[in-house]
Image (cartoon, rainbow, N blue to C red; front, top):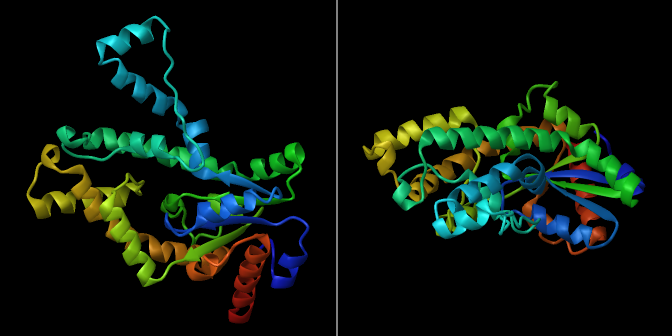
Length: 290
């Protein structure tokens, strides 16, 4: 690992970390806090996806809907209006809206074939955005003079890696330039994430084999046809299964490539000093268990 002890981390003139966890466990909150110190560069994977790799898909989809409205169509065709994506670190809704949900179009769903196509686009985009990390580390220091770097990954990072493969392309690339850090939630955190998701279900990205199995099981258990599925009902049904599916992958990522910190400890972070302390404790725990 880039830092093999708490002492090496504390003494490092350049601190570089990659945070991974389920959405809702504080990755972006901590990243924003560190960025606000003026010493840390915040690299958001989801923001990179939405601006660099899926920006045209997102905007073209919005234009496609606008073209169905005669008034807006005339303005677009005459270049009288501009449609863009107002994505930000704290507003990634354009990406989620494009990913969408499968099911009944009258309830905001889309055909599974189209859903698979967008999922594949997102997988490619996330893989590329993750592999851009080293470039942004160099860019942050060379262009802006930031000594420290935090990569804020999306919850679906675990879908595209094999943590048991010592040659995994993404994990090899990330661990060679930064310290992978898993923010581990408790059972209580998981229950709260499920409750939160149930109140406001959001699109997610899934590994193709997981998605195909979940979709087939849902249709079988409900007896519904594809076009009759309530999109929100399906993704609510799938969410808890996705959490259970991802947990052992996160754990293996931390065990083989980085460290684990408890979400409750990360929640105590109020400044860069607190963050250094939590990371140092995670490194010390790993050293003692080695």
